[in-house]
View 1: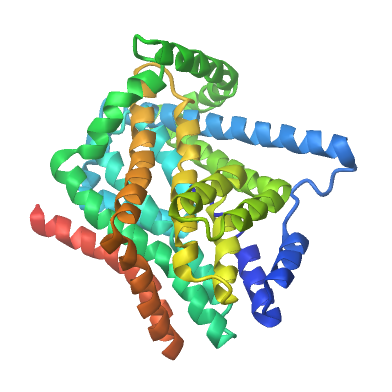
View 2 (view 1 turned 180 degrees about the vertical axis):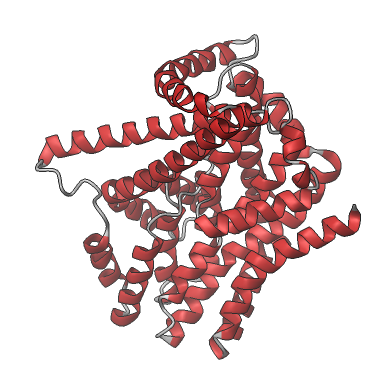
Length: 422
């Protein structure tokens, strides 16, 4: 997912909630604080609404172009040497570390996934890409932890909010412990994705493939002009430097477009997202997961899901265990961006790109099914987050120890393990 946009806004909101201590006040502040990226337009009513949705469509178009540029740029720079170029990441632990650190820095698993999908379309081997996608799930968890810090001034609310925030971390770490070894030794997710990808990328001989082939052709048609123009502009620089610049341009387009989409949909639909959340509260695990996925897919920002759930836990009105399924659902909802990005590729590259996007989707979907479906496993994340919140409540140093440990020490250990095994 998610683009984890709106993090700073969410922190300000948490601070307001901490001062006022009421869910009603939080909702009022949320309405006041939400950003409107097109607020400068002199339109109102229907004209403004049309302009906003046109802007969303243009941003998605730029996202698809960005993915295409990364793929073409990677092919230009690497040629047939893609595997050799990323030989340092052949060890899965190194790929995992790259995914964690990259996502923790840019705070957007959607961006990392889109970039990796573009690289797959450019020839990056799947076995190198998959660990990066796993790492993206861990790295994105830092956002919710930072959101909870906004309530540090209120001891009671901070404890509940920090537990709510870090339950996401514990869930993602548990999912990694379960599925990373399964993928490492048996290729469970990659083999499943490879079986489905041909149909979704329009490469198979069945009605489903035919439908997606039309979709892929349409996306290829609308993105080809800009990607070709950008490619033509960098070609005089040579394959290596031209390819690098083209890929960097693609990354910039992805960063900008995902950020814009998240902010604009947040402004447009956050009220609807709140309605979905409140309607689903107390209705069970499945409803919670579905609502979290739907909210994240609607506003294209897992930060919004967090910003809605963390203060509710902080206020004490809802327990972490009741809200836990929402953040699990956010993991699923945030994979939509990668699937959309995969349609920007065509031909054989389309199948590779779709396979990577499906691996990310299956990882999050299967993790939710396994962990939430087994009572013993379902209890581990909230139990761990409650324990950590108690420690952090006594001494805030544990907050920094946790953030540094999960998002930087684990990647370093992964590299050390890879060196020991090589």
